[in-house]
Length: 171
Image 1 (cartoon, helix red, strand yellow):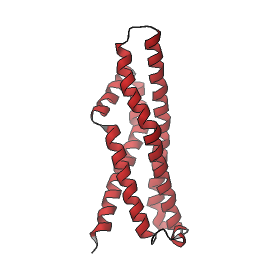
Image 2: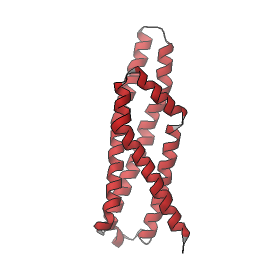
Image 3: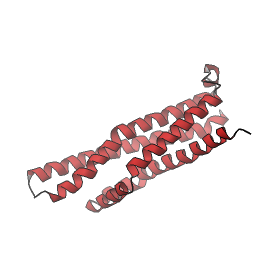
Image 4: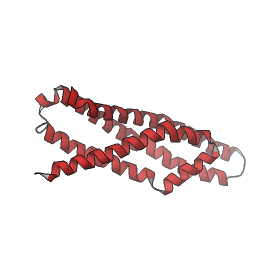
């Protein structure tokens, strides 16, 4: 028995479940709850940053994608177009593309906005009342809005990836 495909599959599924589950939870429950909590929600965000959420999630996502690409290569016989055009192949391809786009949005838009918020929000609290503080808080709100929207996009794309890969064997 070849253990490499088994190991790749286990890593891919475990990391994929963690990545998709975490982002779906954040987008549907955590982010709206933090927003509703007002200033206290920032404490939760700060605690997540201390636990390196924004450093761990891209690694988990990248492991999911890299193992997925190799599993895809193996299943498709080296990216054989005939396999890719089957129902199974198209479903896996669309799922993979959704995950890759989700990763790109998450790392390229959501992560930088969250890192900037984690720097600006505490700094704003140290500023004296006035236009500088108001401008900094406005920037924090704008970035939080961006994070919420992109978080919903990432979660939706990961949901599509999960559905595509779960349904593939039945197509």
